Amino acid sequence: MTARSFENTIIGGGVVVFPADTVYGLACAPESSPAVHRLYSLKGRPPDKPAAVMFFSVSRALDALPELGPRTRSALERLLPAGMTLLLPNPERRFPLACGPDPETLGLRVPALPALADVSVPVLQSSANLSGGADARRLDDVPEPIRAGADLVIDGGELPGTPSTVVDLRGYEDSGAWSVVRTGLVAAEAIGTVLAP
Image (cartoon, rainbow, N blue to C red; front, side, top):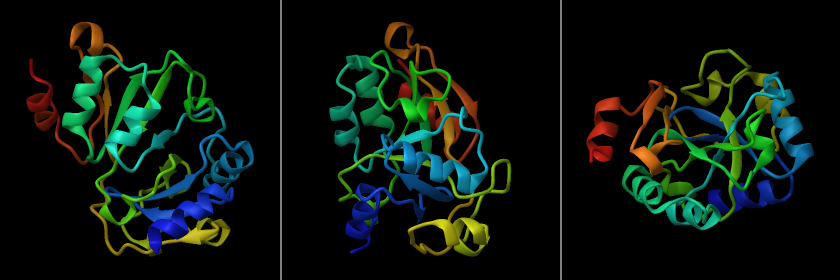
C-alpha cells in the first residue's frame, strides 16, 4: 500500500516525505515544474541548486538512460542499489529541472528500499530538511513546516542518518576515472573495490 500511495501522490503532482536508505527525503515528479517549485520552496532551497533523480530499480534507471555507455552501465549494475548518488554524463539533457545550471550532468539515486521497489516512476529527490540544515534521521527530525506542507508523509522509523556518498562517474566511460565528491554512507574503499579495473 505504501508504494501505491507513494506513486499515486507523485503522479498526481504531490510532494512526499519518505524514508530513504540514508536519511528522510522529499520527492516529487521530476518533470513537473509546479511540484519541483513546491519541493524547493518547502526546503528554502535556491532554485538553481541541482537535485538527484531517484529510480527504485536499477533496470528502470538504465531503461531511462539508454545513451549511457557499456562501461558506465556495468558500473551502475555493480554499484546499485546503494546509499550513493552518481553524477553521470547527460548528453540528452534529461530531467532538466533536476540538473540546475549544468544540464549535461545528472545526479542519479537508486536506493536499497524494498518497501518502494514496486514504484515505477522516477522522482526528483532531496533531503527532507531546510536548505543547509541537519539531515533527518527520524521523522520527528523533519521540520514541522515541511511535514505539514507535504501531501504524503511516510514514517520509516529511525534511519542511518548519514547522507548518500556522491560519486562522479562522468569520465568513467572514456578513462575509468571516478572520484568521491562527498563522503557519505558508502565508503570510498568499497566503491573502489567495485570499480577497480
